[in-house]
Length: 144
Length: 237
Image 1 (spheres, rainbow over the protein chains, first blue to last red):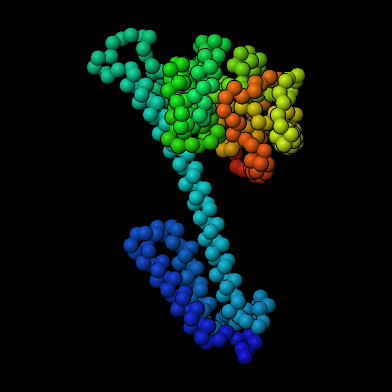
Image 2 (spheres, chains in turn blue, brown):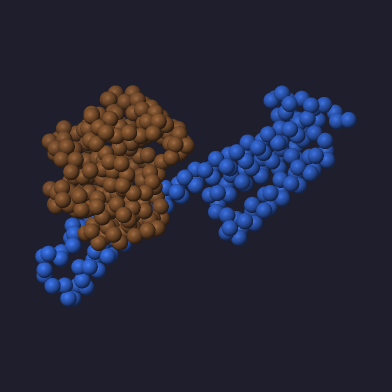
């Protein structure tokens, strides 16, 4: 029988260990350069918040009291974790959108440059370029 | 005056040659730029054989990304006027004669050929017609101007419109959101009645189910577009 409004010690220990493991993995990924700091920031924040809430039982009980969770304070831990996961996912969506936009611009530039190269090739190599006005392919210089 | 015809094409090897020939026949001073949006057939080769310049996108960008490639080209190469003609042959280039004077006379920055603005023989399936109606109604409401055909890619644009779209152009079904963009930038849009042809070859990229999906997406995009920051058009150097 669990006392109402208290976090069991075992739950606290297990949650703390799990959160520390998460922090450790994130740290290792950053160290080995498999995770850019920019994207790691949210994960580090998630880990730190979870460690603090897991280890500091009094704090978790108090916060649970604030938000009206009376029977089982660790539920707050789930809720906070869920919230951070949502934040990370949303962040990914914005990153993905940016990468998509960048890819479009890149594809357009590459395609236009290829056309320009083929036009320059068709105009002939510079040394044997005969001054024939009919073959002068679109000499208008790009504005930037 | 430098004039460019932008022709977006995806797997249109059978139609593309005719489209290019018709544009040249209408006005030989048009430069024709075909944007091949990652075709798996001989679209690019056939277009080049008919005397068009061809931009080959490395992978499929969709209609918005393709057309914007054309606008970027037109902008950096200093074109004064762009005509957009679809590569599937449903637009009749000779009808550019109705669109061009509106822009050349300075009455509008962009002139759109509308299937519904006047008498026309165009029929589309029920779902699509309802979708087109809803989109047209929404855009009319948002821009305070009667717009009848928000899905028409048959357009003539002046340099101001080219500069705006070279910088920022919507992705799917771009004409709808573009109409709202034009309104926010205080560019003037005009519609002229045209008739469009049945597709000669290939299938339309839009099926009934997908049109519902697209319409939802476009309505969301349009709603958001009203609150978006205005893009800064590219400046002439």
